[in-house]
Image (cartoon, rainbow, N blue to C red):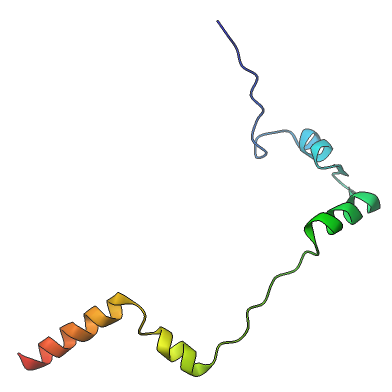
Length: 81
């Protein structure tokens, strides 16, 4: 019989094992050098904001869905019956 060593997913692995893999102390967080390294590789931890859309663009996007056209066609046919 052959046994394979499979590592547990992060949700099942012990916290000590995961914190060692993440280079941090669970109660203290990341060390300054590790935080600086991650900032350099991943960038700052911030949410990207989208540009606000104009009201005309929002109105035009309402008609991009095929469901809207299907309902429009159904209401047009229903108005004739």
